[in-house]
Length: 427
Length: 126
Image (cartoon, rainbow over all chains, first blue to last red; front, side):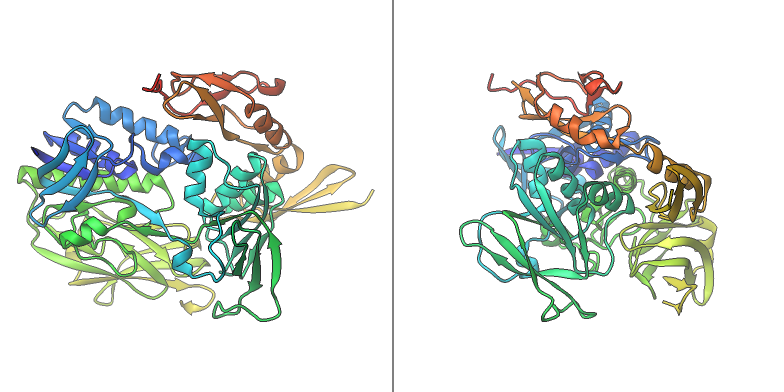
């Protein structure tokens, strides 16, 4: 068995892990290891061949593989960063020992001074949404189909129905159309789409694909292969309305019904998770409830823009490097950050305040429902620390509000973030 | 000739304004509803010459993966996107390939090159 020592071990070589490695190296970490289970770095970006990535980070529009290449090049130039591909982490112990396995080295014991979790997320499946019917072939998650079409060269079907109008579902509607399949329709249980407007326009409207809002699938037909689905309108409580059913013929059903942070390793190590985000509770340095364990990207909370994933990776890398070097400043106090009225999630959930705070804290949040002309306020003990107005706010688009360092000094033990709607008062 | 009104959902920024372009005798008479100049410009372009970026894949011989992701270097006329995708489904390239390599120059005579969006090495099986 190989025994290996590092300053920092990063689990997952997608956008968060790459940014974390580069930033840890720049912050002076000497031995940095990226552990990746796939045959190459880049994570899910490698199958997201569409454009629209990097507008914030690189001020240009890149494709997923293009965005990944930029970071892979940076990391490969970082002489202290080691990359271990085809490697599966089996367990992370609470003393930071990592047990991993790969075909070259076999079973390994890796002992880093700090761990960064960047495992990303995975898709909710048919099981998670309990659609009745047989279990025929031809039912895929949208991301699995994306990998088949874009990287492996298989078309999962020729007549497609997509359930869920999140961005992956919309992107796949266009992708399947370009590959010659007929997309019969997209069904969304909510009264609004969870995808970006530009995707509704460029992926559905451009290809005349109908979007059925407030609709769901009540039955999947077919025994060997999917032959069609029964759809129905849903009421305010998201229950199918009897009498509104109609059938759509298809040989393939794609599910784009949400993403779940992948936290088996972090949870088994003893990291506290947030029930709503599904990811670890972190402070603004992206340190989890266990000292020396950091986390960044979709493993913490599901993002819509990779640029923010990279930003989070950079934060985790920088502070993990300080932790490994023993220079991470001890906090004088901790502030709890909570999501108040109209806000569904806020990350970080905690702010650690050093003796003399100099760095602003960026709060990443999602609103509970779409709204226009809203004010988001960050308050503590009835005192407003920051107030920002937004012309539009949608659950699908993450909002960032920055709290200046000086404001942290005035804050109490708790900070709440809430939304005031111009149209209906308190949301 | 009759007047025609076309509703357009702007995609320039997250505001997502819904504007209207009013056509008379096939010409733009008025653009309303957008809240900035970029929106007005988008509305005009969507009516006169809508453009899109194309991303798809081409087949690779001897590569570590069977497919190479590609992108149109600039936007293409929207009504030519499908024809370009069809054409690219018959294109084959040979590994190794570097990001930015031209996979197809001047596609369908439209003056736009199609380029690789990643490096792709040679298959270790060869």
